[in-house]
Image (tube, rainbow, N blue to C red; front, side, top):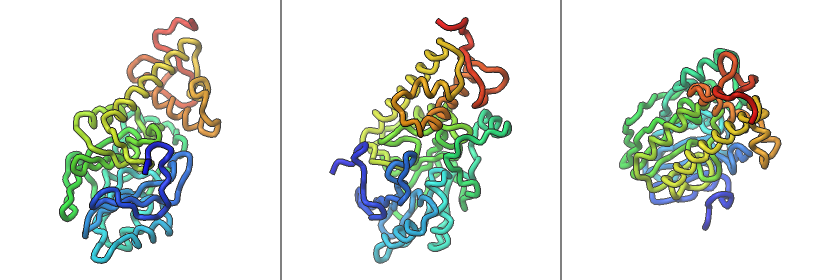
Length: 310
């Protein structure tokens, strides 16, 4: 069965074995931002680790519990990050099972200086959905190893999409959360997302050989090295498009998004503008682009060396 790209459409709430010791359940929260819904993974044979339990949805909670086979118990709950499509169900699942929750840290941990400055200015972004009250029982650090019976998970800190985003290495596979997906590029939306961090995290993952990436949404990433290269190239191409448009005239993030994302559904242009804003912050920090005072979403941007339209 071909599950790649837009062909990915498994039944919601049905436990599907991906390989021995690993199953996936699709949460009932499809949307333009979550694709078919959040992928919840169950790892293990007897002691089960749940990775990204998903949104606060009673039916999904029931499906997770009902997927347990005789002799199985949930002993660990792992979160890649605390967006509302990944983490809210963790608390209820923990209460039902007694399993502790594990993550990089509470919402807000790991945000860069530039993003903290943006938050201090009053900018709250586009509402991709922060789980504001999320706090894990156990905070994890880069390189930490967690044993789940015979399975081992290694923590890899991968900020960019979100400040507290981590991925989990399992053998030569990676639970990549929303950092690397097959169906779409990762949203990098300030102040939660930082483009410089995103690029650095991609390059960090490039230093290792991977078999598969198991993402937070969509199909298995069958060619992790190729996908990482594509993501980096895509971002550099988007940067070039922004610079090209600014050669023509000063523009705001909204104006740039409208000029660049010409084939995008108008309902998604708001998200596209926030994506552009992430690039503009990075370009300002590298002194390629400028605006008066600090970067803000409502401002107009010019090239630092631009002498006017050409």
